[in-house]
Image (tube, rainbow, N blue to C red):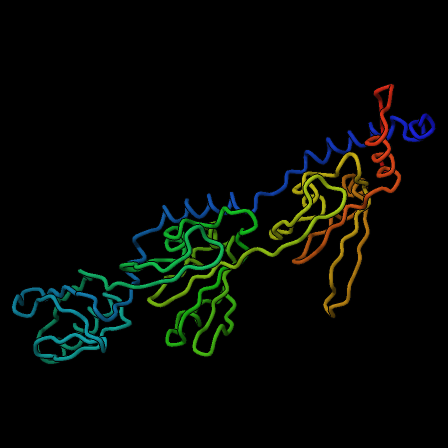
Length: 343
């Protein structure tokens, strides 16, 4: 026993304490807190300016005022074909137009035959109800009835923001899924990647962090009736071996090996070593092992490797330390002192 204790020495314990202090300074990223705060700030600052871009649709109730012509002014509801019926000009197609667009069309129709320089204003008095589904990594997934123009940020806020449940954090993208009968918006969304989601749908993939940061307001697209706003869950990596809390962690925002170890409670002071193996599959599906040393990572002499989905981070255990641990557990040590070197 004296020999084993001497082999262990106290220098290793001091070395591990120093590294533990350095690891403590590596703050594991909170994959959800900043995202949630930014979302709430941006949603609260949503501008009513979006309403001027609202495209009229069936069941909307419009107020039409023709200056100096009270008999022509009226309230009229858009029918299922997207039309309104007005005196003199008859049926007018208005679905898909903004109020400014409707004003221009009515001025052209009345001005061509009936009125000289007509002054016409159009406003939406009642917006038709729209149903939007919010799914994935949000606090309250489900179907929501919305009235009037709403944007992605507002709909996400209606769903309670991003999920706070462990293991259910949001990933780095958002999918806006809609029927292919609305291709105009998708074509204009140059900042998004458009891909098929189903036989009659299209998906606009949006960078979630750019959306909630407010730095790219063009990403805050208006939602439409029947849209599905899906927030994919973050990928998962696994931390095993000589750590305090082995288990899975969300993979997002370029979480690195040292951060993953910190999120797993750090290296177990009794069984863990500084030697780490990252197991992953390459692009051809072949297993790949990447070895590194935590001391070198902290000293910046080795790369702090970003993790990928389904990576397995193994903090190697020491056979000698495990033996010493078993001896310590089974046999009493009269001196009361015990130390194990870090390998």
